[in-house]
Length: 562
Image 1 (cartoon, one colour):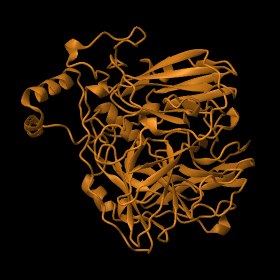
Image 2 (cartoon, one colour; image 1 turned 135 degrees about the horizontal axis):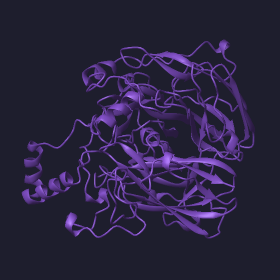
Image 3 (cartoon, helix red, strand yellow; image 1 turned 180 degrees about the vertical axis):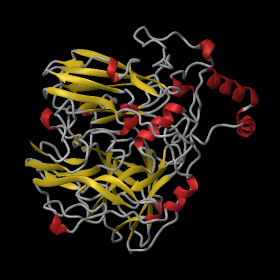
Image 4 (cartoon, one colour; image 1 turned 60 degrees about the horizontal axis):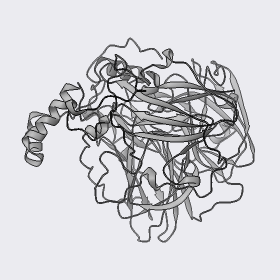
């Protein structure tokens, strides 16, 4: 996508106006049921009572009133977020998508194993859906669980074109529960995505209003010692980087939504004390990671990316962009509970309520302190300064205009809950906790390894793999039927949710045959991880970071299975 020629400015909307806007009720425009074939408009988060196998989905511009000033967003059947689609494993679904926009559109079924020509990525899977035309997706459903769908055209996903998919298992649910809600998280801005990209290209910390200051130096010096703090700041200055770069786009422009509603609208799910409630968390944000907890309730994590895992009871978990987690909670008291999703950078939160009575609320907890990046996030965990840094690995990409850093000492961070979540007094989920409930089907050893460095230049806001943007890189070829190991080394100081279309990714987290199977894997800064892929479906598949602006600015590859 090209960067727009819109004029620059510090911010198109002030934070004060955003906070004022949060008081407005999000208007989710549902047309009368008679005007639509399927699906029927339901309250946000409510799952349709029965699965269907035929859908008519009309993509159009809809007036949305999330912020004080009305906006027009791309929607599905007049809804933002798009309607929840409920399928059944074993069925063949037919989805007729009609485009009434004045530009091309598409729908990608995120995490769904389907033929390549049904995957919905313009330029790879098909030609896209031109204005005024329709396209019919039809494919057998071979899996169950919680997934989602979104546009893969232009920046329509960043502007609201996303929705949840629930697939009933053919053999019935493993776990019993009384209520079932989708909790879809997203980020929302009055600033057009092209303008956000333009601003980041103009100034990489454009939305970072929490830089360290002289005042914070003395505060840190009292805690850690003056020399240690001075050395740390000189290191960051020498690298032209900021330890407070947690998220590229922050609460300076984003309002954070739960099921399309801002915090003040307070999305609400009802329960009766003693019931078991299933919560299907989906992160459909463009750029935001969330840390989720429900004060007073523990969560039993039962699925990751739609796949069953051995239940893990936690107080909190981080959900990266494009991931899904299913949890069970069992509130026994006659009281309300806040579903609290604070952003990783602590510049805002999404919020909802579980309650036995409509209108009952619970306290909203204060946000935790903001994280501060360390040398661990730069892949220099074992060093004390640049002079001590060992040389880069022989396969590391060169330092150049497209690659600002090389992780000299990348480490396994699968048991690390991530920045801002360590030693916070709560039991926090890590990737090392995930263990599949059934053994993997393909037990062959990989025939080769494909190592990719995740690279970027924050100052120029360029992203890529191995120091190359998508436009400069060759596709990654896989032979049909082969089994390979992907190795990711994150040379950047940002988390990257890496998504491989069309194929499963078996994360090597030490669980052997019970390694968890995912469609999106978070690569932490300065880390090294690996996962196995069986190339069992031919076609052209997208492979990219799911932070939309990273993908748009180059962190994208084509995987060819032939």
